[in-house]
Length: 222
Image (cartoon, rainbow, N blue to C red; front, side):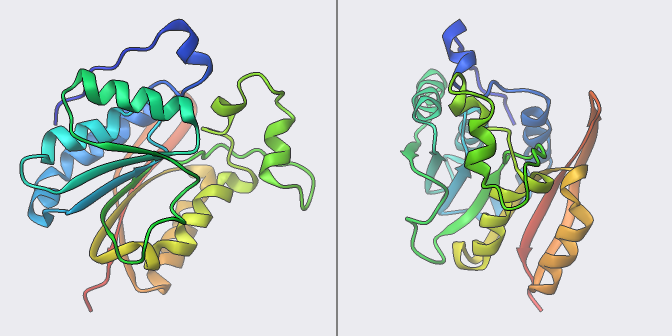
């Protein structure tokens, strides 16, 4: 799977999460899964938190001739702009939506879902909301902080998606999720399996003091 070209101006680096080791790990995992994704022939492929647009553009380039629509969703309007720019540079046909997660989507729509979430633990006071924690980093770079600050166990945002996963995925839907070891991936796997999903680790890598995992989550056929 070809890594898309992307163009960051100096000002962009203060507004949008630039592709890094976690991005490339996710791309490598999706490349390993390319044959399975082609067999799936997803009608709707969607990336939550599309950021630079590199991941959803890579999927659109690799699957575009055999699949339906490709969507990138991000709460950060600067990320939406960057994703559109990356798609144009790589001649990809995809749509970008500026919204918070996926509450606006009807049930059972998504065949292929991808998420590199804000996974860094940023523990505050008990009961403190994630938004309040993010505000402590200051107004400058607020949108960028939201791309990595994950609250308690780094799981505040990810848990919102996990809670909605059964509603979001189509009957054949597959979800690829990037996690940090501190996110407690073993516990997440047990939780999803108890909710009748089939889960396995398709890629992991240690990088600069982080141990990252990519999970593949699918409906349990049994």
